[in-house]
Image 1: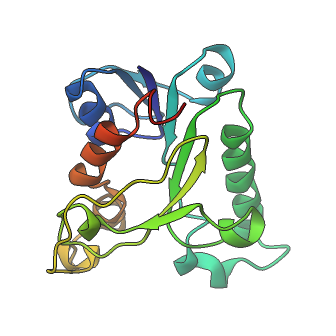
Image 2: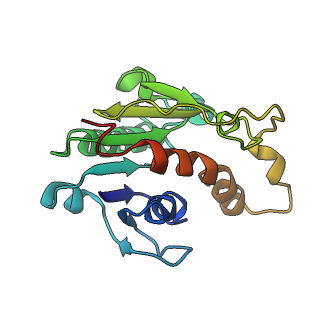
Length: 193
């Protein structure tokens, strides 16, 4: 399959699909942290100019996650930035692609768009973390758990007070390799037909 991974610079999801034999490209406004096919730039032109078998997107959650909702009051700069984040989400969702997955945490999208189609946790796939992962699925089947891990710890256990805000944010937003592997194994042309 031809797969576009939007808003990913870690290469985790891209590499999982490439390892499974797919032609996978990641796209982000910054360089990739790992070797592989990567485009530096805006993903929207790629969504509207080319046909992809599957698009997986991880739009920034800074203005959409529940931890920041208290700051979102009409007339504030944060409110405007949240509206722009929602607009970006909708441009991805409404793109002419047949199969789209958008990942984001629990937050404003449930109110501003609609509730997610599926909420998964890394521990469903063997990882010990307990972070909520919301998935909005367009013509893509829900992920099926592969290995329940009874050890559960929050992602925040990996950050400390000596780290910068940017370092903490990067660690907390990093995707989970075992979830990416399940995506690559389960989301095939056959499963989406």
